[in-house]
Length: 534
Figure (cartoon, rainbow, N blue to C red):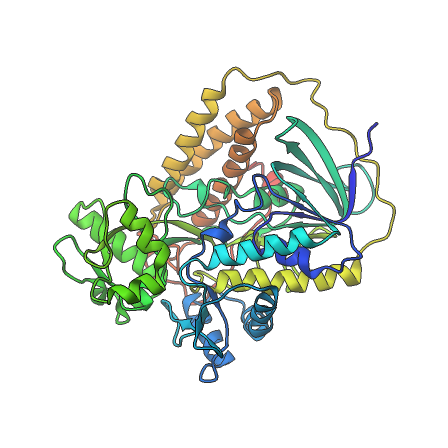
């Protein structure tokens, strides 16, 4: 038997959360960082706005906490919010120390912008391409570290736990991966495993996320026995560029923060009819308002206009958006930008504590994969990158203090003796398309019980088909991602059916009012199996 690759820490995911964790571990530790594509392929690079934090002398921790709690619609865990915001300055300073080129205002100060739901300017940014700046910097730092081994084109299949190996205990000891270079499945073992694979917005037809956002870490943790919480709260970003050639291009919240107006096709502003804060209302309110007006008018899109600002201002603050729109024939200095809502962020995820610990020993989850209690029923703008930083750094501290030195068990090689090459990949493409379409139609911005029950029926049939395919054919990237998306989609649907109210990002026409008290929606695969539901 070939011995698997072995590390102290295995980090699945190479975005802000995964790389922050890797770089926060001491150089004496042997660490693997896994990307299922290239290191640059994660969602972090797509973040335009910035990182929220208490950085200005006129701002306070209390104000940032209050804004986060208000956006979370009563479902945030206040200790998690306090923990995150109190650590915001140190986390951002760590990024500055890594060399992230944030936009400055003069020689001494950084420029801070404001976004929807914030009561102050507290978003530190690198023009309108903050994610790229953070990603490039952290990847460069990771490549300089001799204790980090970076794997490209390795897609995770499943976690390996002592329980699965028939041993005592419930600790995670590694994972199986499909090596896309060799087309072989390989095991990688480790004393601690961290999931930093991002969210699951690819479950929807329209999304601002890159193709890899297929909920891999959430699905793997779910299958391994972890609880998953609040997956019905999928944030739809109000403003993605509407153009046939503009795949997944986000128009940052900061455009509205800097005075952008949302317009109907006839040029009329409308947000004041939905919220006194107008365009600066939280994302769930803005997305629902746009969705309502599009359906009312039968419009394909609405418009975001910031052409009343000077050309120099727009080119300085939004160079990426300016260039991208101009390449598609839209001059934002002279005309409004066509926009539509799109699936953007998973507020729920694998249940963790302040150290990123899950229900399984030595298994951590950080970033969008995790549900820390910070976001509640709706994420406040630019708190996502902050969460990545704060919890990754906290998880690193815990791993350093608690790394298990017990011998790692023997891990069996992947058994592919009973499977064959598939000649029916068309089934995968059809199932992929079907899943994302019915999730968009039935489990979207506005929901009903009838639509959710239709989706539940469809996803059950789809999961059976995909499981049969998985059992009989060799694994591929498309199959593995689809398998994960079906699991995550089912969790989203079941969570939405369980919530008999409207709150934050979950809006039901059958239950339009919130309940007097907010409760988390907790899901466990083990519990559902006991009920005969899985």
